[in-house]
Amino acid sequence: MSDLQTLPIRIGTRGSKLALAQAEETRAKLIAAHGLSPDDVAIVPITTTGDRVRDRPLAEIGGKGLFTKEIEQALVDGEVDLAVHSLKDMPTVLPHGLAIACVLERADPRDAFISNVARRLVDLPEGAVVGTSSVRRQAQAKRLRPDLQVVPFRGNVGTRLRKLAEGEVAATFLACAGLMRLAMEHEITAPMDPEDMLPAIAQGAICLEIRAGDETVRETIAPLDHAPSHIATTAERAFLGVLDGSCRTPIAGLALLEGGEVVFRGMVLSADGETVLEAERRGPADEAERLGTDAGEEVLSRGGADLLA
Ligand SMILES: NCc1[nH]cc(CCC(=O)O)c1CC(=O)O
Image (cartoon, rainbow, N blue to C red; front, side, top):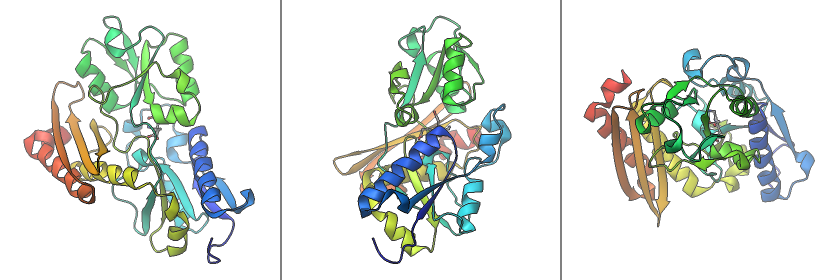
């Protein structure tokens, strides 16, 4: 550890259980990478708009960065040295002066199907009620099963599982990664095959955000960067950046590294899942950004612009 870094290193995070688990994971990695003592890394929980507003679908509250704004302000104000976020909650354009310096090793990017009445989505009874406030999950569920009735579903993981147990809905979806980080993977009925449900951009990845010019912190966190995860999410976020959709537009994408090559698939859907525009790219890892951008431009030119309007 360089003498330049002032200790303790302060990590800004949301206060939710999942966010705290992610901050703890980051803290443990920092301690291991630099041989620090536990007191050398402090976790600073910060409440965000996304945490405060619990009763409405996120798409309705609108605006980007619902889970990030207040944490970024603390970063700008020098109250914390770095911020830990779920990369899938991050806008593609960051506030001026901030940068994503690091992507931790990604957990399972897939969506989890969770139900007490069926083993798989295709096995749900005709007309079953599925709870999700995600336009992306709704569109893809309807694409596979147009008969399903999709209802809004928010609240923390515990609340959602209770509603499911009480029979309010027959099934729901959550990110596998979140459940794993909460040590709740036993709640997963079955992971969704990405062929059936393509994940959200950067789902399962944690990023570390810093002040762009803060070379000391940049160097301190550098050993935590996981190149394959960083490369894959770079392709995915480039795709998202071209589409520039609101959170009301179902957009999905996943990049995997296969033998040093990036294999990316991205899609934009109509809310009912009847219209699907897809693009695929494969190419060298150092061209991840261009591959994602290219795929985004292909989707736009094939009619994605209308879906996004
Ligand atoms: N939409 C909120 C959100 N942001 C990040 C995760 C956890 C999964 C991840 O790290 O990508 C979740 C919950 C979910 O989608 O089930």
